[in-house]
Amino acid sequence: VAVTPEQDDVALVQAFRAGDRKAFETLVRRHQKPVWAIANRFARNQHVAEDLAQKAFLLALERIDELRGAFRPWLLRITANLAKNYLRDNARLVQQDPDAEPPESSLGDPLPLPDEAYDSADRQQAVRLAVAGLPERQREVVLLRIDGQLPFAEIGTVLGITENNAKVTFHHAVRKLREALGGRDAVL
Amino acid sequence: MQCCEDRIPALVDAATGELGGAARAELNEHLLHCPACRAELALLQGTTSLLEDTSRTPEDFSLAGFAARTTDRAVTFRDRSVKGLWWSVTRGVRLALSVSGASLAASLALFVLSQRPAIHPAASVVTTPAAATTSADTWESYIPEAVRLVHDSGGGGSGLVPADPVSLDDGLHDLSVDELEQLTLSLSPS
Image (cartoon, rainbow over the protein chains, first blue to last red):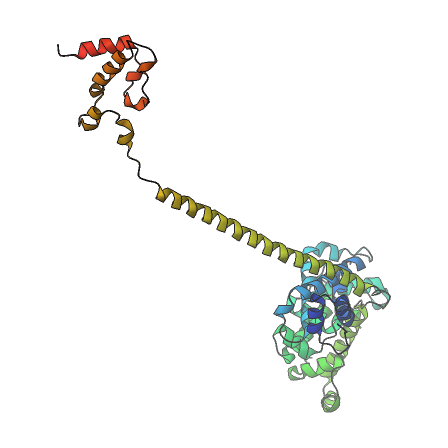
């Protein structure tokens, strides 16, 4: 079965089920970046991120019959759910990133680090902790918008809320992140 | 200072680069007169930018081979699912065949049993005309027959052993010849 770029995602899955290996590879290439980015937000290393991203594709393959609507938002939501489960099961590991210094304060407290102290790893870790500490729905919106690069309209559809609601939720998430990261000075 | 709540969706759109055209112009017009919304937009942009910077979107080299590795895993997963399905189907067929076979055997056995003539336990016991017609089927009724057998056999030996052991019921065949004669004499009215 020849795979064209325009081929529908679901058709690619069906083609793969019928034995066309190339179809699934095309599907993965099409969506791998946002899936990988969501998986990588909390994963403690690239191996874990890759495992989570692969599991997202496998779950999509297994549950393709449950798909209603567009494929990509649905796939990204699956990935966000896997990330949530990973966070739940590895809360301690997420807070103790071996690649970065541990944060000086707990999740709820503002991080008193000045801008210049934010080197890449510190900043990464601080933001990771702050995002991990968001309420589930807010975290989901942030993951889907920033890492998944979905427009708010699609986020609303996949989460079963209105587009405006998705934007307001994002705004609430930003406020929480601002508090967690130590206010305006730390963020800007 | 609180920004205007009704402007939040537009501010979020502006911060994330989704606002354009007339909506953008309208927001700009509002921002000229609303310092709270200007501050909010700046904060939204700053935080969004920080989130985007820390989004570890993989570079192309990180994703090298990812699609192939994922596909390998998917192929294994698919094949295992197919094998699992095949195993389930064949197991179901085997089970159905076993149940059918057992049912068939049970039906056959019942049929064969239903075709056998009825067995009356008394018929196998009755060996003498006297016994067959005697309503009081007690052990005493066998005594004359036992005595006859003893005499026919010349007082002992193998002639005592009846063709059908049940014909000498109630343990009489366990007695010796002498014991039977004693027993007969003791029971005789004369």
